[in-house]
Length: 252
Image (cartoon, rainbow, N blue to C red; front, side, top):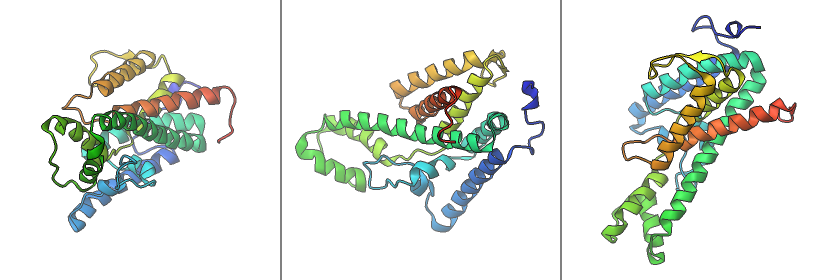
């Protein structure tokens, strides 16, 4: 069967899991708008994934964060990628396997992001005198005033970002879909808005991952994207597909 047999021919045609994921994500976004107007609060503060060391962390955020988005552009980009790549994978794998893959890559994204954040937090706590630990932790959880040595301000500011900024979006799972697509269709040429010529998936996906790793390591001040979540989704996707390729269907 040719690749074009898997391609969605119209935007309103999608296999069941992709269609329902699109609906769920859109409903979450609409609910966040309504909640902000009614309760004057950001629903992402409840549903986004917080660092486990934060008092705002809840286990259910590992799942709900996958369906929450930071804005219309964020939602639109992820949903377009979900439809474009997810519809093809669901038609090949079937609905059950696709849903398992989507959820596991999303969870993998959260786990790698949290693991990297824990490592970074540990490095920062090591720079803070032990006698200030309780005072700084109270500040991180209450966001009150903190009178400390100016030299520690940058360290505490970075800790505050880890503790108080939730991660939202389906991007981790989307990167899992990109990895899946690249492994199944390595020679398919992709036309990208930010790339002037068509590029085969087997070249684009590694380049994308290298770019994510570079940005994740450097942590530029203008960059608020959770790059290690993207890498986590792709990594778990790679592992799952390699596992399945050996005939292992234990978690289907």
